[in-house]
Length: 488
Image 1 (cartoon, rainbow, N blue to C red):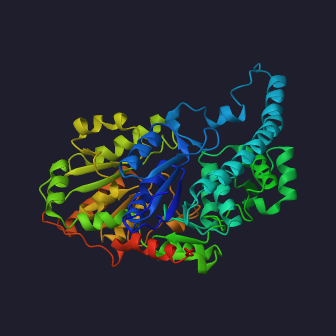
Image 2: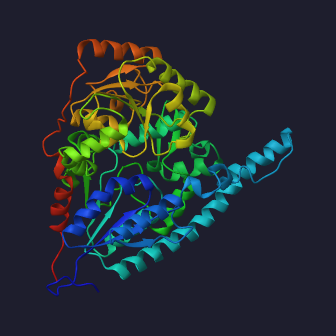
Image 3: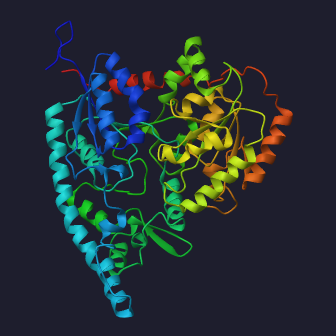
């Protein structure tokens, strides 16, 4: 056991980090707990290169890392894992191209493979429960943090379930501004329409699905005559039998958390609109912005950032947030590049420096041609939240980062090439931000931009304007959570 200078044992906090993006969002909170004298433990719940790099980062900050056993966590896309179709057995069965073969194929995939998957997940969920007990017994933390996971029976649920049994406070850290059952339902149906979701999650896709939907009506939601499960019903049934399921699988985040930290009143309203317990919702701000707000007042930092961008310190630049439609599997690569080039073409003769911010899913090497061909700067050294305070204007697809435009008092043009903000679109209300202007083609992007530049001068130094209290998120999280630590 580690002891501080006064001889008292260090308090311990456990952060359950199961995906790479969440690891970025939460890192300032980890650092803050370390500065306050806590021994910081990290449970890394995914595999792949990004997980290895994250473990090295944790080691350099003297955090103690633990890995979820391989096979019980999540798999990085770059780790050579089979895709979802392979896991469901679709590409593992060879059939002849005739009607009889198709019927056999359909029966194997829709009826037999889910049964095999169900038995496999029963075993996996049992292992997850055992591991959760062991890791909490090993670390014995006073506080546990997790994320707003969207999974069924995995390590996230295993840890929160075990924390409940131990009467150990477990809190949810902010990751996305979009929360609540209403948003989850709309997103799920949008993914199905976009081809990002397997049709075997539909309630009528197989006899087993129909029976499960009838036995557990709360597991499915319906829209326009179509029923959809939150997760694959075979996995949900296995999680329910294993005791790592939740009462309402559609509520997001899980209602098992003692409290849920959110970054804004906007996020809080989404949860309350979904009938989330208001006593559990705590508005704290965005942890990633704590350091951004502090460093954005330092001249050396600003000089370094603007020199990297190739812009005079304090000068204006256009921030373009690139949509990963092909990487996220809701567009073909050909269509993706056609839209990307259309966006670049409409901006290529504009008289202002252009900086591209790539989504973490974007394959960087595939976009490097744009620097030479279009004269833009692809920003690899700074994340979008670091660029936002200093840009003249942001041009972005419908994305959670768009809410930072209000935080930093920036104008925003949203290019909505998939119609997510058009009338009648699922979850339109979450993307139709009141202060933004919208464009549905590259031509309209340029029209909106030209109109804006005619009315808002840009050839001057632009200061950062941040909302009150944005630089105190980590302190708020720490103070609130530590109040639940019971001294021995």
